[in-house]
Length: 636
Image 1 (cartoon, one colour):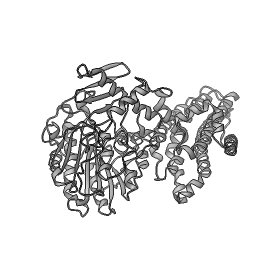
Image 2 (cartoon, one colour; image 1 turned 180 degrees about the vertical axis):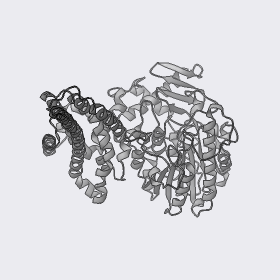
Image 3 (spheres, rainbow, N blue to C red; image 1 turned 120 degrees about the horizontal axis):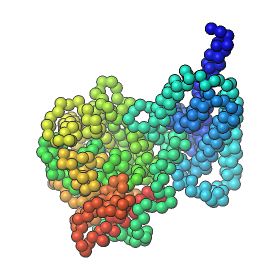
Image 4 (cartoon, helix red, strand yellow; image 1 turned 60 degrees about the horizontal axis):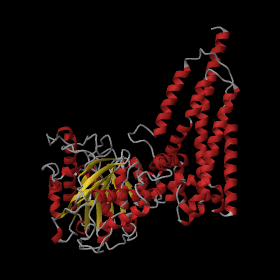
Protein backbone atom coordinates (compact mmCIF):
# COMPACT_ATOMS: atom_id res chain seq x y z
CA UNK A 1 0.00 0.00 0.00
CA UNK A 2 1.31 3.43 -0.96
CA UNK A 3 2.16 6.00 1.70
CA UNK A 4 -0.52 8.31 0.31
CA UNK A 5 -3.17 5.57 0.55
CA UNK A 6 -2.06 4.66 4.08
CA UNK A 7 -2.36 8.29 5.21
CA UNK A 8 -5.88 8.45 3.76
CA UNK A 9 -6.99 5.31 5.64
CA UNK A 10 -5.34 6.59 8.80
CA UNK A 11 -7.21 9.87 8.51
CA UNK A 12 -10.54 8.04 8.20
CA UNK A 13 -9.85 5.86 11.20
CA UNK A 14 -8.58 8.88 13.13
CA UNK A 15 -11.73 10.86 12.43
CA UNK A 16 -14.11 7.96 13.21
CA UNK A 17 -12.30 7.37 16.49
CA UNK A 18 -12.81 11.04 17.30
CA UNK A 19 -16.47 10.85 16.27
CA UNK A 20 -17.10 7.82 18.51
CA UNK A 21 -15.11 9.37 21.34
CA UNK A 22 -17.13 12.57 21.04
CA UNK A 23 -20.43 10.71 21.34
CA UNK A 24 -19.28 8.63 24.32
CA UNK A 25 -17.81 11.65 26.07
CA UNK A 26 -21.03 13.61 25.66
CA UNK A 27 -22.96 10.66 27.07
CA UNK A 28 -20.55 10.46 30.01
CA UNK A 29 -20.87 14.19 30.63
CA UNK A 30 -24.66 14.13 30.90
CA UNK A 31 -24.62 11.13 33.24
CA UNK A 32 -22.06 12.83 35.49
CA UNK A 33 -23.91 16.15 35.28
CA UNK A 34 -27.17 14.48 36.38
CA UNK A 35 -25.33 12.88 39.31
CA UNK A 36 -23.91 16.28 40.31
CA UNK A 37 -27.35 17.90 40.31
CA UNK A 38 -28.66 14.99 42.38
CA UNK A 39 -25.88 15.51 44.89
CA UNK A 40 -26.82 19.20 45.05
CA UNK A 41 -30.47 18.33 45.75
CA UNK A 42 -29.54 15.85 48.49
CA UNK A 43 -27.01 18.21 50.05
CA UNK A 44 -29.39 21.16 50.03
CA UNK A 45 -32.14 19.10 51.68
CA UNK A 46 -29.89 16.99 53.91
CA UNK A 47 -31.35 18.51 57.08
CA UNK A 48 -34.76 17.16 56.06
CA UNK A 49 -33.24 13.76 55.28
CA UNK A 50 -31.45 13.67 58.64
CA UNK A 51 -34.61 14.74 60.48
CA UNK A 52 -36.36 11.66 59.07
CA UNK A 53 -33.59 9.39 60.40
CA UNK A 54 -32.91 8.04 56.93
CA UNK A 55 -29.71 5.99 56.87
CA UNK A 56 -26.94 7.27 54.61
CA UNK A 57 -26.80 3.84 52.95
CA UNK A 58 -30.40 4.30 51.78
CA UNK A 59 -29.80 7.88 50.67
CA UNK A 60 -26.81 6.97 48.51
CA UNK A 61 -28.92 4.40 46.64
CA UNK A 62 -30.60 7.31 44.86
CA UNK A 63 -27.59 7.52 42.55
CA UNK A 64 -27.86 3.85 41.59
CA UNK A 65 -31.62 3.80 41.02
CA UNK A 66 -31.34 7.01 38.99
CA UNK A 67 -29.16 5.47 36.28
CA UNK A 68 -31.87 4.05 33.95
CA UNK A 69 -33.91 7.28 33.91
CA UNK A 70 -30.76 9.39 33.56
CA UNK A 71 -29.68 7.24 30.63
CA UNK A 72 -33.10 7.63 29.00
CA UNK A 73 -32.93 11.41 29.43
CA UNK A 74 -29.38 11.53 28.08
CA UNK A 75 -30.49 9.52 25.05
CA UNK A 76 -33.03 12.17 24.16
CA UNK A 77 -30.54 14.97 24.74
CA UNK A 78 -28.01 13.28 22.47
CA UNK A 79 -30.32 13.12 19.45
CA UNK A 80 -29.21 16.50 18.11
CA UNK A 81 -25.48 15.97 18.79
CA UNK A 82 -25.78 12.59 17.06
CA UNK A 83 -27.09 14.18 13.84
CA UNK A 84 -24.40 16.83 14.17
CA UNK A 85 -21.75 14.10 14.35
CA UNK A 86 -23.15 12.45 11.22
CA UNK A 87 -22.57 15.70 9.37
CA UNK A 88 -19.09 16.06 10.84
CA UNK A 89 -18.02 12.73 9.40
CA UNK A 90 -17.89 14.47 6.03
CA UNK A 91 -17.90 18.17 6.82
CA UNK A 92 -15.93 19.63 9.76
CA UNK A 93 -15.92 23.43 9.80
CA UNK A 94 -15.14 25.08 13.14
CA UNK A 95 -18.64 26.56 13.47
CA UNK A 96 -20.15 23.07 13.88
CA UNK A 97 -18.06 22.67 17.02
CA UNK A 98 -19.44 26.00 18.22
CA UNK A 99 -22.99 24.74 17.65
CA UNK A 100 -22.23 21.73 19.84
CA UNK A 101 -20.96 23.99 22.62
CA UNK A 102 -23.96 26.31 22.37
CA UNK A 103 -26.39 23.37 22.46
CA UNK A 104 -24.70 21.87 25.51
CA UNK A 105 -24.60 25.21 27.29
CA UNK A 106 -28.33 25.72 26.70
CA UNK A 107 -29.03 22.22 28.03
CA UNK A 108 -26.89 22.78 31.13
CA UNK A 109 -28.42 26.22 31.66
CA UNK A 110 -32.03 25.00 31.48
CA UNK A 111 -31.42 21.87 33.56
CA UNK A 112 -29.53 23.85 36.22
CA UNK A 113 -32.37 26.36 36.35
CA UNK A 114 -34.87 23.51 36.73
CA UNK A 115 -32.90 21.86 39.54
CA UNK A 116 -32.41 25.16 41.36
CA UNK A 117 -36.12 25.92 41.11
CA UNK A 118 -36.85 22.50 42.60
CA UNK A 119 -34.61 23.33 45.55
CA UNK A 120 -36.78 26.38 46.12
CA UNK A 121 -40.19 24.69 45.86
CA UNK A 122 -39.47 21.40 47.61
CA UNK A 123 -39.78 22.64 51.23
CA UNK A 124 -43.27 23.98 50.42
CA UNK A 125 -44.56 21.68 47.68
CA UNK A 126 -42.74 18.47 48.62
CA UNK A 127 -42.47 17.57 44.96
CA UNK A 128 -40.33 18.01 41.88
CA UNK A 129 -41.12 20.78 39.44
CA UNK A 130 -44.61 20.20 37.95
CA UNK A 131 -45.86 21.83 34.78
CA UNK A 132 -48.14 24.25 36.63
CA UNK A 133 -45.16 25.69 38.52
CA UNK A 134 -43.94 27.01 35.17
CA UNK A 135 -46.90 29.37 35.23
CA UNK A 136 -45.30 31.19 38.16
CA UNK A 137 -42.32 32.11 36.00
CA UNK A 138 -44.61 34.49 34.13
CA UNK A 139 -44.43 36.72 37.21
CA UNK A 140 -40.79 36.69 38.41
CA UNK A 141 -41.50 39.32 41.08
CA UNK A 142 -43.96 36.97 42.80
CA UNK A 143 -41.34 34.21 42.78
CA UNK A 144 -38.83 36.57 44.35
CA UNK A 145 -41.30 37.85 46.96
CA UNK A 146 -42.35 34.34 47.99
CA UNK A 147 -38.84 33.45 49.17
CA UNK A 148 -36.69 35.06 51.81
CA UNK A 149 -33.94 37.32 50.45
CA UNK A 150 -31.22 35.07 51.83
CA UNK A 151 -32.72 31.93 50.30
CA UNK A 152 -33.25 33.64 46.96
CA UNK A 153 -29.61 34.70 46.65
CA UNK A 154 -28.36 31.30 47.81
CA UNK A 155 -30.41 29.71 45.02
CA UNK A 156 -29.10 32.24 42.50
CA UNK A 157 -25.55 31.42 43.55
CA UNK A 158 -26.22 27.67 43.23
CA UNK A 159 -27.67 28.20 39.77
CA UNK A 160 -24.73 30.27 38.55
CA UNK A 161 -22.16 27.93 40.09
CA UNK A 162 -23.87 24.80 38.78
CA UNK A 163 -24.18 26.21 35.28
CA UNK A 164 -20.71 27.71 35.10
CA UNK A 165 -18.76 24.84 36.66
CA UNK A 166 -20.66 22.17 34.72
CA UNK A 167 -20.11 23.86 31.39
CA UNK A 168 -16.44 24.44 32.24
CA UNK A 169 -16.20 20.73 33.08
CA UNK A 170 -17.73 19.80 29.75
CA UNK A 171 -15.54 22.12 27.70
CA UNK A 172 -12.29 21.12 29.42
CA UNK A 173 -12.69 17.36 29.86
CA UNK A 174 -15.52 16.09 27.62
CA UNK A 175 -15.74 18.28 24.53
CA UNK A 176 -14.08 16.82 21.43
CA UNK A 177 -13.13 19.36 18.77
CA UNK A 178 -13.51 17.90 15.27
CA UNK A 179 -11.52 19.76 12.60
CA UNK A 180 -9.64 17.19 10.50
CA UNK A 181 -11.14 17.12 7.02
CA UNK A 182 -11.87 13.85 5.25
CA UNK A 183 -13.16 13.30 1.72
CA UNK A 184 -16.67 12.07 0.92
CA UNK A 185 -15.27 8.63 0.23
CA UNK A 186 -15.53 7.95 3.95
CA UNK A 187 -18.57 5.69 3.57
CA UNK A 188 -17.35 2.56 5.32
CA UNK A 189 -17.61 3.47 8.99
CA UNK A 190 -20.43 6.02 8.97
CA UNK A 191 -23.34 3.57 8.33
CA UNK A 192 -22.12 1.27 11.09
CA UNK A 193 -21.76 4.18 13.51
CA UNK A 194 -25.22 5.47 12.56
CA UNK A 195 -26.97 2.10 12.98
CA UNK A 196 -25.34 1.21 16.28
CA UNK A 197 -25.90 4.68 17.74
CA UNK A 198 -29.54 4.87 16.63
CA UNK A 199 -30.22 1.48 18.24
CA UNK A 200 -28.52 2.65 21.43
CA UNK A 201 -30.55 5.88 21.57
CA UNK A 202 -33.85 4.08 20.96
CA UNK A 203 -33.19 1.39 23.55
CA UNK A 204 -31.79 3.91 26.00
CA UNK A 205 -34.68 6.31 25.49
CA UNK A 206 -37.34 3.68 26.20
CA UNK A 207 -35.32 2.10 29.01
CA UNK A 208 -34.67 -1.30 27.48
CA UNK A 209 -36.35 -3.97 25.36
CA UNK A 210 -39.29 -4.57 27.71
CA UNK A 211 -42.87 -3.94 26.57
CA UNK A 212 -43.50 -0.99 28.89
CA UNK A 213 -41.33 2.09 28.25
CA UNK A 214 -39.48 3.58 31.19
CA UNK A 215 -41.16 6.12 33.48
CA UNK A 216 -40.60 7.66 36.91
CA UNK A 217 -41.42 4.41 38.70
CA UNK A 218 -38.10 3.01 37.53
CA UNK A 219 -36.30 5.33 39.95
CA UNK A 220 -38.66 4.87 42.91
CA UNK A 221 -37.13 2.64 45.56
CA UNK A 222 -37.81 4.07 49.02
CA UNK A 223 -40.73 4.70 51.37
CA UNK A 224 -39.16 8.13 51.94
CA UNK A 225 -40.52 10.27 49.12
CA UNK A 226 -37.63 12.75 49.23
CA UNK A 227 -35.24 10.00 48.13
CA UNK A 228 -37.53 8.97 45.26
CA UNK A 229 -37.67 12.58 44.13
CA UNK A 230 -33.90 12.83 44.36
CA UNK A 231 -33.57 9.75 42.18
CA UNK A 232 -36.03 10.85 39.48
CA UNK A 233 -34.45 12.84 36.65
CA UNK A 234 -35.85 16.37 36.73
CA UNK A 235 -35.97 16.86 32.95
CA UNK A 236 -37.72 13.54 32.38
CA UNK A 237 -40.23 14.29 35.15
CA UNK A 238 -41.27 17.72 33.90
CA UNK A 239 -41.47 16.45 30.32
CA UNK A 240 -44.01 13.83 31.41
CA UNK A 241 -45.88 16.47 33.41
CA UNK A 242 -46.08 18.76 30.36
CA UNK A 243 -47.14 15.95 28.01
CA UNK A 244 -49.86 14.81 30.39
CA UNK A 245 -51.25 18.32 30.75
CA UNK A 246 -50.67 19.94 27.39
CA UNK A 247 -54.39 20.03 26.57
CA UNK A 248 -55.37 21.91 29.69
CA UNK A 249 -52.58 24.32 30.63
CA UNK A 250 -54.88 27.26 31.06
CA UNK A 251 -58.44 25.98 30.95
CA UNK A 252 -60.49 22.99 32.03
CA UNK A 253 -61.45 21.26 28.74
CA UNK A 254 -64.71 20.19 30.41
CA UNK A 255 -65.81 23.67 31.40
CA UNK A 256 -69.49 23.17 30.54
CA UNK A 257 -71.14 25.55 33.01
CA UNK A 258 -70.26 28.29 35.46
CA UNK A 259 -68.27 26.79 38.32
CA UNK A 260 -70.89 27.91 40.83
CA UNK A 261 -73.61 26.04 38.95
CA UNK A 262 -71.44 22.93 38.52
CA UNK A 263 -70.42 22.89 42.20
CA UNK A 264 -74.04 23.34 43.26
CA UNK A 265 -75.14 20.38 41.21
CA UNK A 266 -72.31 18.15 42.46
CA UNK A 267 -73.08 19.09 46.06
CA UNK A 268 -76.73 18.19 45.49
CA UNK A 269 -76.21 14.85 43.76
CA UNK A 270 -73.55 13.70 46.26
CA UNK A 271 -75.41 14.80 49.40
CA UNK A 272 -75.90 12.05 51.97
CA UNK A 273 -79.18 12.63 53.78
CA UNK A 274 -78.18 10.51 56.78
CA UNK A 275 -74.62 9.66 57.83
CA UNK A 276 -74.88 6.08 59.06
CA UNK A 277 -73.66 2.62 58.13
CA UNK A 278 -74.68 -1.00 58.37
CA UNK A 279 -71.91 -2.81 60.25
CA UNK A 280 -71.22 -6.04 58.42
CA UNK A 281 -68.07 -7.07 60.33
CA UNK A 282 -67.56 -8.79 63.65
CA UNK A 283 -64.44 -6.68 64.33
CA UNK A 284 -63.19 -3.19 63.49
CA UNK A 285 -59.57 -4.30 63.13
CA UNK A 286 -59.49 -7.30 60.77
CA UNK A 287 -56.60 -8.24 58.58
CA UNK A 288 -57.41 -7.11 55.04
CA UNK A 289 -56.44 -8.87 51.82
CA UNK A 290 -57.34 -6.95 48.66
CA UNK A 291 -57.27 -8.95 45.43
CA UNK A 292 -57.33 -6.72 42.33
CA UNK A 293 -58.24 -8.78 39.28
CA UNK A 294 -56.79 -7.73 35.96
CA UNK A 295 -59.46 -6.97 33.31
CA UNK A 296 -62.34 -8.88 34.89
CA UNK A 297 -65.58 -7.88 33.22
CA UNK A 298 -68.85 -8.50 35.03
CA UNK A 299 -69.72 -10.79 32.10
CA UNK A 300 -67.32 -13.33 33.61
CA UNK A 301 -69.52 -13.66 36.71
CA UNK A 302 -72.55 -15.91 36.55
CA UNK A 303 -74.39 -13.96 39.27
CA UNK A 304 -73.96 -10.69 37.35
CA UNK A 305 -75.72 -12.00 34.23
CA UNK A 306 -72.63 -13.76 32.94
CA UNK A 307 -72.56 -17.21 31.39
CA UNK A 308 -72.02 -20.07 33.87
CA UNK A 309 -68.79 -22.04 33.95
CA UNK A 310 -66.24 -19.27 33.38
CA UNK A 311 -65.53 -18.51 37.04
CA UNK A 312 -67.01 -21.37 39.11
CA UNK A 313 -64.69 -20.78 42.09
CA UNK A 314 -65.80 -17.16 42.35
CA UNK A 315 -69.41 -18.35 42.21
CA UNK A 316 -68.73 -20.68 45.13
CA UNK A 317 -67.00 -17.94 47.14
CA UNK A 318 -70.11 -15.76 46.85
CA UNK A 319 -71.73 -17.92 49.54
CA UNK A 320 -69.22 -16.51 52.05
CA UNK A 321 -69.61 -12.85 51.21
CA UNK A 322 -71.40 -9.83 49.84
CA UNK A 323 -71.46 -9.33 46.08
CA UNK A 324 -72.11 -5.97 44.42
CA UNK A 325 -73.83 -6.66 41.12
CA UNK A 326 -74.11 -3.14 39.75
CA UNK A 327 -70.66 -1.64 40.29
CA UNK A 328 -68.62 0.11 37.60
CA UNK A 329 -64.95 0.95 37.03
CA UNK A 330 -64.31 4.69 36.74
CA UNK A 331 -61.77 4.32 33.93
CA UNK A 332 -60.52 1.79 31.36
CA UNK A 333 -56.86 1.53 32.43
CA UNK A 334 -55.02 -0.11 35.33
CA UNK A 335 -53.15 2.97 36.52
CA UNK A 336 -56.45 4.87 36.67
CA UNK A 337 -57.91 2.09 38.77
CA UNK A 338 -55.14 2.40 41.36
CA UNK A 339 -55.99 6.04 42.04
CA UNK A 340 -59.67 5.16 42.17
CA UNK A 341 -59.25 2.18 44.52
CA UNK A 342 -56.65 3.47 46.96
CA UNK A 343 -57.47 7.19 46.99
CA UNK A 344 -61.14 7.15 46.09
CA UNK A 345 -60.29 9.57 43.28
CA UNK A 346 -62.30 8.69 40.14
CA UNK A 347 -60.56 8.35 36.80
CA UNK A 348 -61.00 11.09 34.22
CA UNK A 349 -60.34 11.58 30.49
CA UNK A 350 -57.01 12.63 28.95
CA UNK A 351 -54.65 11.57 31.74
CA UNK A 352 -54.24 9.75 35.02
CA UNK A 353 -53.30 11.13 38.41
CA UNK A 354 -50.88 8.23 39.03
CA UNK A 355 -48.46 9.31 36.29
CA UNK A 356 -47.90 12.70 37.96
CA UNK A 357 -46.16 12.51 41.34
CA UNK A 358 -46.73 16.20 41.99
CA UNK A 359 -50.47 15.49 41.94
CA UNK A 360 -50.86 12.09 43.57
CA UNK A 361 -48.62 13.18 46.44
CA UNK A 362 -51.52 15.40 47.54
CA UNK A 363 -54.00 12.51 47.66
CA UNK A 364 -54.74 10.65 50.88
CA UNK A 365 -54.85 6.86 50.62
CA UNK A 366 -56.55 4.06 52.54
CA UNK A 367 -53.10 2.56 53.09
CA UNK A 368 -52.02 5.66 54.99
CA UNK A 369 -55.12 5.44 57.18
CA UNK A 370 -54.42 1.78 57.95
CA UNK A 371 -50.73 2.36 58.66
CA UNK A 372 -51.76 4.97 61.22
CA UNK A 373 -53.74 2.21 62.94
CA UNK A 374 -50.72 -0.08 63.15
CA UNK A 375 -51.31 -2.18 60.03
CA UNK A 376 -48.37 -3.87 58.30
CA UNK A 377 -48.62 -3.46 54.55
CA UNK A 378 -47.55 -5.30 51.40
CA UNK A 379 -48.27 -5.25 47.67
CA UNK A 380 -47.76 -8.14 45.22
CA UNK A 381 -47.62 -8.15 41.44
CA UNK A 382 -46.07 -10.67 39.07
CA UNK A 383 -45.09 -8.11 36.44
CA UNK A 384 -43.37 -4.74 36.33
CA UNK A 385 -45.09 -1.96 38.26
CA UNK A 386 -43.51 0.72 36.06
CA UNK A 387 -46.64 0.65 33.85
CA UNK A 388 -48.56 3.90 34.30
CA UNK A 389 -46.13 4.84 37.09
CA UNK A 390 -48.03 2.45 39.37
CA UNK A 391 -44.94 1.72 41.44
CA UNK A 392 -44.49 5.40 42.23
CA UNK A 393 -48.10 5.62 43.35
CA UNK A 394 -47.87 2.41 45.38
CA UNK A 395 -44.81 3.73 47.21
CA UNK A 396 -46.73 6.94 47.89
CA UNK A 397 -49.34 4.73 49.55
CA UNK A 398 -46.69 3.67 52.04
CA UNK A 399 -46.63 -0.07 51.34
CA UNK A 400 -43.60 -1.30 53.24
CA UNK A 401 -43.16 -4.49 51.20
CA UNK A 402 -43.50 -4.46 47.42
CA UNK A 403 -42.98 -7.69 45.52
CA UNK A 404 -42.86 -7.65 41.72
CA UNK A 405 -41.28 -9.54 38.82
CA UNK A 406 -37.65 -9.02 39.84
CA UNK A 407 -38.34 -10.56 43.26
CA UNK A 408 -39.26 -13.98 41.88
CA UNK A 409 -36.71 -16.67 41.11
CA UNK A 410 -36.41 -19.00 38.16
CA UNK A 411 -38.50 -21.72 39.82
CA UNK A 412 -41.81 -20.09 38.86
CA UNK A 413 -43.50 -20.10 35.46
CA UNK A 414 -43.38 -16.74 33.75
CA UNK A 415 -45.24 -15.48 30.74
CA UNK A 416 -44.50 -12.56 28.50
CA UNK A 417 -45.82 -10.08 31.09
CA UNK A 418 -44.40 -11.76 34.18
CA UNK A 419 -45.07 -14.39 36.84
CA UNK A 420 -48.44 -16.08 36.58
CA UNK A 421 -51.15 -15.75 39.20
CA UNK A 422 -50.84 -19.11 40.96
CA UNK A 423 -47.22 -18.38 41.92
CA UNK A 424 -47.85 -14.80 43.01
CA UNK A 425 -50.82 -15.85 45.16
CA UNK A 426 -48.72 -18.64 46.63
CA UNK A 427 -45.92 -16.17 47.45
CA UNK A 428 -48.37 -13.81 49.14
CA UNK A 429 -49.89 -16.65 51.16
CA UNK A 430 -46.48 -17.84 52.31
CA UNK A 431 -45.43 -14.34 53.33
CA UNK A 432 -48.64 -13.65 55.22
CA UNK A 433 -47.95 -16.65 57.42
CA UNK A 434 -44.92 -14.72 58.69
CA UNK A 435 -46.62 -11.30 58.80
CA UNK A 436 -47.45 -9.58 62.04
CA UNK A 437 -51.16 -8.85 62.46
CA UNK A 438 -53.07 -6.75 61.67
CA UNK A 439 -51.96 -6.58 58.04
CA UNK A 440 -53.21 -5.03 54.84
CA UNK A 441 -51.96 -6.94 51.81
CA UNK A 442 -52.91 -6.16 48.22
CA UNK A 443 -52.28 -8.32 45.19
CA UNK A 444 -52.72 -7.39 41.54
CA UNK A 445 -53.15 -10.35 39.18
CA UNK A 446 -51.94 -10.34 35.57
CA UNK A 447 -52.73 -13.66 33.85
CA UNK A 448 -56.06 -12.39 32.49
CA UNK A 449 -54.22 -9.75 30.45
CA UNK A 450 -53.13 -10.49 26.90
CA UNK A 451 -51.17 -12.36 25.58
CA UNK A 452 -53.02 -14.99 27.70
CA UNK A 453 -50.08 -17.38 27.97
CA UNK A 454 -51.17 -18.87 31.31
CA UNK A 455 -49.83 -22.37 32.13
CA UNK A 456 -53.15 -24.20 31.67
CA UNK A 457 -54.75 -26.32 29.03
CA UNK A 458 -57.69 -24.70 27.25
CA UNK A 459 -60.86 -25.63 29.13
CA UNK A 460 -63.56 -23.51 27.48
CA UNK A 461 -64.15 -24.04 23.76
CA UNK A 462 -66.58 -21.20 23.19
CA UNK A 463 -66.46 -17.40 23.43
CA UNK A 464 -65.67 -16.60 19.81
CA UNK A 465 -63.13 -13.77 19.49
CA UNK A 466 -62.68 -13.68 23.30
CA UNK A 467 -62.08 -17.40 23.80
CA UNK A 468 -58.51 -16.85 25.03
CA UNK A 469 -59.72 -14.13 27.39
CA UNK A 470 -62.36 -16.28 29.10
CA UNK A 471 -59.87 -19.15 29.40
CA UNK A 472 -57.43 -16.83 31.12
CA UNK A 473 -60.20 -15.79 33.53
CA UNK A 474 -60.92 -19.46 34.18
CA UNK A 475 -57.26 -19.94 35.07
CA UNK A 476 -57.18 -17.00 37.48
CA UNK A 477 -60.45 -18.19 38.98
CA UNK A 478 -58.93 -21.62 39.58
CA UNK A 479 -55.94 -19.96 41.24
CA UNK A 480 -58.34 -18.03 43.50
CA UNK A 481 -60.07 -21.22 44.55
CA UNK A 482 -56.79 -22.88 45.47
CA UNK A 483 -55.66 -19.74 47.31
CA UNK A 484 -58.76 -19.62 49.50
CA UNK A 485 -58.64 -23.35 50.24
CA UNK A 486 -55.06 -22.99 51.48
CA UNK A 487 -55.71 -19.69 53.25
CA UNK A 488 -58.62 -21.21 55.18
CA UNK A 489 -56.13 -23.51 56.92
CA UNK A 490 -54.02 -20.62 58.24
CA UNK A 491 -54.26 -19.18 61.75
CA UNK A 492 -54.97 -15.64 60.52
CA UNK A 493 -57.83 -16.61 58.20
CA UNK A 494 -60.70 -16.24 60.68
CA UNK A 495 -59.70 -12.65 61.42
CA UNK A 496 -59.30 -11.58 57.79
CA UNK A 497 -61.56 -9.60 55.48
CA UNK A 498 -61.01 -10.45 51.83
CA UNK A 499 -61.99 -8.02 49.07
CA UNK A 500 -62.05 -9.05 45.42
CA UNK A 501 -62.41 -6.33 42.80
CA UNK A 502 -61.42 -5.80 39.17
CA UNK A 503 -59.20 -2.94 38.07
CA UNK A 504 -61.29 -2.34 34.95
CA UNK A 505 -63.43 -4.22 32.49
CA UNK A 506 -62.64 -5.85 29.16
CA UNK A 507 -64.39 -6.73 25.96
CA UNK A 508 -66.30 -9.96 26.49
CA UNK A 509 -67.82 -12.73 24.41
CA UNK A 510 -70.89 -10.45 24.12
CA UNK A 511 -68.88 -7.72 22.37
CA UNK A 512 -70.71 -4.83 23.98
CA UNK A 513 -69.89 -1.36 22.73
CA UNK A 514 -66.97 0.17 24.63
CA UNK A 515 -69.06 3.24 25.39
CA UNK A 516 -72.14 1.55 26.80
CA UNK A 517 -72.40 1.20 30.60
CA UNK A 518 -72.58 -2.59 30.62
CA UNK A 519 -69.05 -2.72 29.18
CA UNK A 520 -67.64 -0.96 32.27
CA UNK A 521 -69.40 -3.10 34.89
CA UNK A 522 -67.01 -5.07 37.15
CA UNK A 523 -67.30 -7.34 40.20
CA UNK A 524 -66.74 -6.32 43.83
CA UNK A 525 -67.09 -8.79 46.68
CA UNK A 526 -66.41 -8.65 50.42
CA UNK A 527 -65.97 -12.05 52.02
CA UNK A 528 -64.44 -13.90 54.94
CA UNK A 529 -65.30 -15.24 58.38
CA UNK A 530 -65.24 -11.70 59.82
CA UNK A 531 -68.48 -10.97 57.97
CA UNK A 532 -71.52 -11.44 60.18
CA UNK A 533 -73.49 -14.60 59.26
CA UNK A 534 -76.67 -12.71 58.35
CA UNK A 535 -74.86 -10.89 55.54
CA UNK A 536 -73.15 -13.86 53.92
CA UNK A 537 -74.44 -14.75 50.48
CA UNK A 538 -76.34 -11.51 49.85
CA UNK A 539 -76.21 -9.44 46.68
CA UNK A 540 -76.44 -5.65 46.51
CA UNK A 541 -77.84 -4.25 43.27
CA UNK A 542 -77.55 -0.50 43.94
CA UNK A 543 -75.54 1.67 41.54
CA UNK A 544 -71.95 2.04 42.74
CA UNK A 545 -68.46 2.98 41.60
CA UNK A 546 -65.06 1.42 42.15
CA UNK A 547 -63.96 4.68 43.82
CA UNK A 548 -66.51 4.03 46.59
CA UNK A 549 -64.31 1.29 48.04
CA UNK A 550 -62.22 3.67 50.16
CA UNK A 551 -65.05 5.16 52.21
CA UNK A 552 -66.91 1.83 52.32
CA UNK A 553 -63.94 0.02 53.84
CA UNK A 554 -62.88 2.71 56.30
CA UNK A 555 -66.45 3.19 57.52
CA UNK A 556 -66.49 -0.46 58.60
CA UNK A 557 -63.32 0.21 60.59
CA UNK A 558 -64.74 3.37 62.20
CA UNK A 559 -61.98 5.46 60.61
CA UNK A 560 -62.13 9.00 59.24
CA UNK A 561 -63.41 9.12 55.66
CA UNK A 562 -63.46 12.88 55.13
CA UNK A 563 -60.32 12.94 52.90
CA UNK A 564 -62.21 10.81 50.35
CA UNK A 565 -64.79 13.33 49.15
CA UNK A 566 -65.47 11.49 45.87
CA UNK A 567 -66.09 8.15 47.60
CA UNK A 568 -69.44 6.91 49.00
CA UNK A 569 -70.18 4.44 51.79
CA UNK A 570 -71.94 1.57 50.04
CA UNK A 571 -73.18 0.20 53.36
CA UNK A 572 -75.01 3.43 54.10
CA UNK A 573 -78.62 2.81 52.98
CA UNK A 574 -78.98 6.53 52.26
CA UNK A 575 -76.04 7.03 49.88
CA UNK A 576 -76.98 8.76 46.59
CA UNK A 577 -77.21 6.36 43.65
CA UNK A 578 -75.54 7.13 40.34
CA UNK A 579 -72.65 5.81 38.25
CA UNK A 580 -69.87 7.80 36.64
CA UNK A 581 -67.27 6.35 34.27
CA UNK A 582 -64.77 7.95 31.90
CA UNK A 583 -63.00 7.14 28.69
CA UNK A 584 -60.37 9.04 26.71
CA UNK A 585 -62.85 11.39 25.04
CA UNK A 586 -65.59 11.83 27.63
CA UNK A 587 -67.90 10.29 30.21
CA UNK A 588 -70.77 7.95 30.91
CA UNK A 589 -73.46 8.70 33.50
CA UNK A 590 -75.99 6.18 34.80
CA UNK A 591 -79.05 6.77 36.98
CA UNK A 592 -82.31 4.97 37.71
CA UNK A 593 -83.92 7.16 35.06
CA UNK A 594 -81.51 6.10 32.32
CA UNK A 595 -77.98 6.84 31.14
CA UNK A 596 -76.10 8.96 28.67
CA UNK A 597 -72.62 8.75 27.11
CA UNK A 598 -71.11 12.03 25.96
CA UNK A 599 -68.13 12.98 23.80
CA UNK A 600 -67.26 16.65 24.49
CA UNK A 601 -64.80 16.88 21.59
CA UNK A 602 -67.63 16.28 19.14
CA UNK A 603 -70.36 17.66 21.40
CA UNK A 604 -72.13 14.38 20.68
CA UNK A 605 -74.25 12.10 22.84
CA UNK A 606 -73.20 8.62 21.79
CA UNK A 607 -76.08 7.14 23.79
CA UNK A 608 -78.90 8.76 25.74
CA UNK A 609 -81.78 6.74 27.19
CA UNK A 610 -83.06 9.38 29.61
CA UNK A 611 -86.62 10.50 28.87
CA UNK A 612 -88.07 13.98 29.09
CA UNK A 613 -88.55 15.97 31.27
CA UNK A 614 -85.43 14.70 33.14
CA UNK A 615 -83.07 14.60 30.17
CA UNK A 616 -81.61 18.10 30.49
CA UNK A 617 -81.22 17.95 34.29
CA UNK A 618 -79.49 14.54 34.29
CA UNK A 619 -77.17 15.63 31.48
CA UNK A 620 -76.15 18.65 33.54
CA UNK A 621 -75.57 16.46 36.62
CA UNK A 622 -73.15 14.14 34.84
CA UNK A 623 -71.28 16.86 32.96
CA UNK A 624 -71.01 18.96 36.14
CA UNK A 625 -69.52 15.96 37.95
CA UNK A 626 -66.76 15.63 35.35
CA UNK A 627 -66.17 19.40 35.27
CA UNK A 628 -65.68 19.67 39.04
CA UNK A 629 -63.62 16.45 39.22
CA UNK A 630 -61.27 17.57 36.45
CA UNK A 631 -60.97 21.02 37.97
CA UNK A 632 -59.84 19.45 41.23
CA UNK A 633 -57.37 17.26 39.33
CA UNK A 634 -55.95 20.34 37.58
CA UNK A 635 -55.47 22.12 40.89
CA UNK A 636 -53.86 19.25 42.80
